[in-house]
Length: 406
Image (cartoon, rainbow, N blue to C red; front, side, top):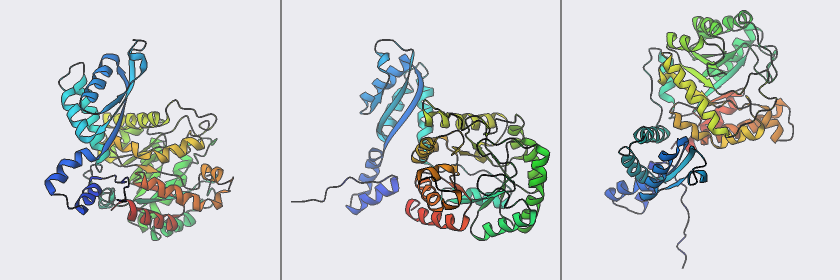
């Protein structure tokens, strides 16, 4: 006799609770089972040998699992990465035990607890006076926001030279807003692989008139795509309200202080190298570890400079010091960045990895590939998608949200 046995694919507590209600489980039983129904895998890096032993024994004794370096047993290594596995209930029991163990285990327990809580929750909304920004942050977690790309450059990889004229650029921005853009990101320097820097004065001359005109004709938030504090300041004064920094505010030492002074949102992106050399031979020992560590470090650096953590967003930097396989792995494992606790921004639009995967397609034939990466990024945790084709990708985002944001 068949009982239609199947493995359930449920990712949130709300989904799990609904499934339990379908079998008419009692509310107290549902509440007891929820902490047992979700499974977590948490990785820690460079844990001292005695502490790694304590972590392993604590989790095993509470019904969880732990993986550590085999060299710990023979004392061949002084530290080890540790992977902890278990249900939420097993994690809670283990963490409550760890806080009493000494050797700094209480700090590790707090770090694990924070990572799980951030992974499970929507990022905190900052207090902002700008109504447009307040609405933007309020929407995060409820729906995917679409950021329309406007490059006022002669040499960007996709649309270089198309919008170098101010009137053409402004009209394109207004068209993207009509098509569904929640944010317009304006860039005055191409950061395509192999590109050379542009003097700040030239970059300012390109972006400021366009930003002023868009700000006069629309209430849509404008982001300035630059890693130079001088350019960012001029753009903010002209009407921009967000900074998008491909270097994670690491190229210009004045950028963190500017973000703190202006109390403005900032998107911190991961990059390996510089636009000039980032694609020469990008290699990683542990891709997601390095991306997450860099972004977490840049968030902390901004906070140390006086920025409000709630105003910060992170971007894994698709195509910025990554191979095709690196980019695909980031999209597949994007949700891991939620442990940082900040909204996730991603830009895959028309990028070379799409062309390569689909048989060396030119830029103008990468629409479907872009749609696939946008949909998968949303399914895997993206909050904001940066795109060229706003009308089409707004539809992709709405359809994806209907599936994943129930």
